[in-house]
Image (cartoon, rainbow, N blue to C red; front, side, top):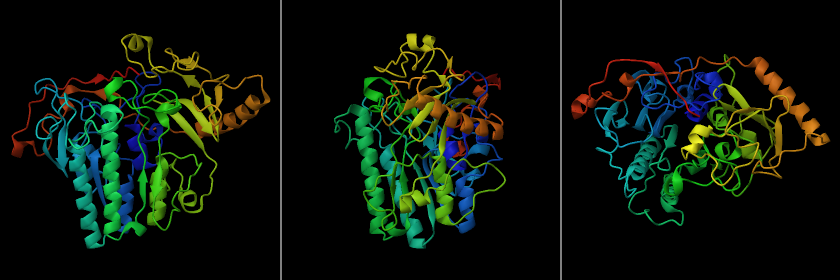
Length: 444
């Protein structure tokens, strides 16, 4: 997904190529039939950390392309345990293969086969398997006294939602809550492990999510974004605002709250800064170094740009957010029961046709109106002042923007996970159909 590409490159998807131009303002991602993936021109965080001898591992979902040339070990990671795609399924071998699970550069099985997920009960041990892999990796690096970067990317809260037996039915919030409870417990174990190894005071841990909770997955599979509008797939706050917690005993004062506006791209720049590595100087880096925020509770003034495809949908400056385009999803999808904003329709805001507001953006004060329900009156001085500030920022941004080559335009059934590396040893190779590429259809 765009967020994962942004996290690892420090760059907006419109710059790093993780977007589509097939239709206006669409959310493209990397399903099995995607031809593209992370561009070879992009420089990923683990590649840069090698300059200081960091060992880098990804555990869990990659989502930056599943064809061999796009996999993590080809892009700076030393180790990988996990999967190139989401755990959608179960699939059937002749039409669509189940997703492979890799150990480093070879598959070790597939979801719903060697790596069981019971769709009916919601039981799966995957989070526990990912937890154990992380604890083992941290132990190995601590014993060898090597600096390390661990990108722990479980995906249990993605529909179909799963949890292991110990957590199933234990939360007050259904299956989604059970999955969250298990992830919470896992992170607690990872932190305790760092403490027990005595490396907690030289390890920065950052917890966040790649998007707001999906709210369109029905009662069992959906999360909640509290007061924020809508959810995943939208550029409203429910889709883009996530919790974030930074932990570094002795460096980050416990219990402090920051009002800093951040983005996952900042993790790229901040990680390099903490490791003493300079970011590449031959490209635009959108991420900020948040070290002063984390260590001195400084506040840095910065805009946040909300894109869908290559369309700038909204901009946030301080507490103000200006929407240049509004759209939740199409009437056609909505009428089929796909609702991105259940219980939260805001007339003129959560529109089902793409509405342009370029001449007169909808502006909200998110401190007073976190739910984006009451646009500021265009007659007011407040509106005129904010518009002036936002317009200057947007004009500068668009003047300097050189979009990357879109990587998510072409699809082909022949590129699905039919016979990933390592399938021979397992007897898990499947026959791919003839190549027949088409322009992917991104409905929203």
